[in-house]
Image 1 (spheres, one colour):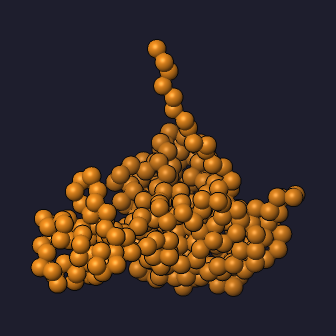
Image 2: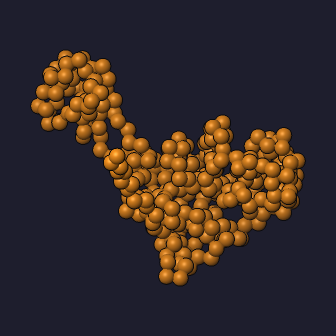
Image 3: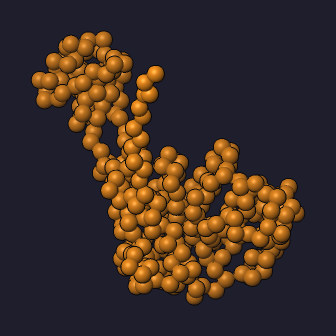
Length: 311
């Protein structure tokens, strides 16, 4: 299967460095989320990898070869960068057939990918009549056309309805299970957390993180436990004796920072304290991502102060 290898990749636009000596690898058999704030260099990196722009230095290769050197590239790498790029006067079928013919792909694949992406019924409609979600499905169909070993998808769920979001999520997971290489750029943290096994995070053109999802979350958080009990006083005293500082919330639940559920459970069991709830609080990808990139956003909105006008 195809791996994507980026080595010391650099891109300067005049005095601005958009990509700064990036080195990372995207491996088969997993879905890799490609994250970063606006202006972080994600789109530039994808364009450099696909030969749409020339690097100032460094390389991006697919199994050791640049994209431009691949014969019939759609059979090796499927790409979704801009779903709006398809010519509006063509039908979906004719658009895909042109791609298939130019890449040595059997015409029979066109009908199959239209079916797979839910566009079979509108294959003969002109693309200019398509909604954003339909164009997005067509872009995904083009990426799947050559049954590639690797796919690179930029914001694949953009414009999709809930059914479409579930479909693309399962599609990406399925490709990874088949041993393919899947790289997905997205700004949607909750959605990325639902499908990504591994994360590559950029900030101001530099590599900030290259870790499995769980390791990334663990690296940006402290253990914390949520507890509910009928013996609040005894519970608090028992934990303080063990060196913890439980805090009671307005909802009657306690949080114990720096502890795990098993540790708190043992303390409660030793004191015969009944527990109604005992849960490890898991950090969200959004929280971990914002913590990592807080100082790396080129475009950040100022806090909005709301004032009450005196009558």
